[in-house]
Length: 417
Image: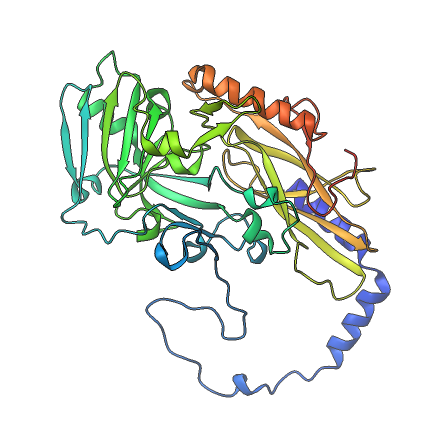
């Protein structure tokens, strides 16, 4: 409520009284009746609602590195520049697939729990639909998001084509812990292997601590059954961790005493280090933000009142403060937030702006939230954080610790923090 009042006060200050009076005067002179659509009976119901024909079509940005040879391998990025709020509609939620989207018959699909358990189990989808459900709002982000920003020359593309491997949804399912406790986890189990039912059998190793903490078996997304591209009939969901680990089309979970070192987590999902080595098993997604309006390829009609808006997120917890600079980082002002009460979800920030040709950039505060098991993620996670802090320092973003972090965005790459 405080953020909303602050935003409205600033907006009122930006829009001059004279301009507001002119708008009221024009409105009072308009006739009160008579548009064609007011005189005819409207359209009937539809089974599934569609956008207005007067709205520009909104769609994902495709990244298909193999073209028509493998059209389902790559990514379809969310058009974040065209969206509002913090929830991504199902039709434009980003997709990352290695071998296309399988057409799975839920009546034939099974989920297996085996390995270091007392009772190996097999579940039908119908059986899983009978478990008591919870609903949580979480973001998902591909660990390769924003990689297009590493090209030698800045890409002149919309924000979604650059940073759109991020989406946020309301997920409904039940804790993975329920199935593991039912199977009986043996003391020597330290990891799980999660495997999908796509033709690539996409698989990742996950520490048991995370599986017993906030990991979910997701069955619904934004109130409807998962779509095939998002893992229908069921997927794993690991809040705050790199999206690739939230295995879609989940078919089995094997409990093990060490990581499995699958092809997916060795050939692709590792972090190259400056000394030629690679850091493996880096889980948590870092704190990040992007201005989505105004952003690349957009044209502002004229100077004057504008709204700066964007999204921020952190795999470590919740973003609780976003500050915006409109003078190259010389001064900062707090933006109004939507969604700040939700950990590991997107936050929408807004700031009223009297545009005079300058550029803007955000920075933010985050709040650390640890669940009981999160403190035991091990040396690999601490190494990831140390690397992240080093990168923050090299980019001029402070020491990488909790508190304020200043980010550089493409619109102002050389501005001081």
